[in-house]
Image (tube, rainbow, N blue to C red; front, side, top):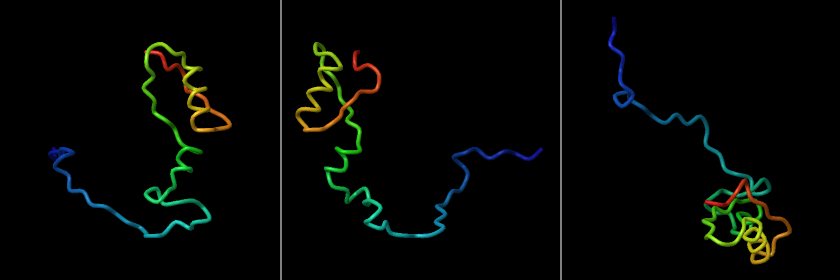
Length: 78
């Protein structure tokens, strides 16, 4: 029976099929994306302090960043 090769012993190489550039009309390269786009389409990972409710913190974020809509996924409670 042939000996199986452990994953860390397997030789690996990067296979690049094609190299291309992002057309600016379809978005930005992540390293060049403006902060406004991160805020508009992004997610804020927030460590909520004890005390205020999840809804209060979401309302604060909405007011501070002057956003039209803000929500939270699930509970922010510990």
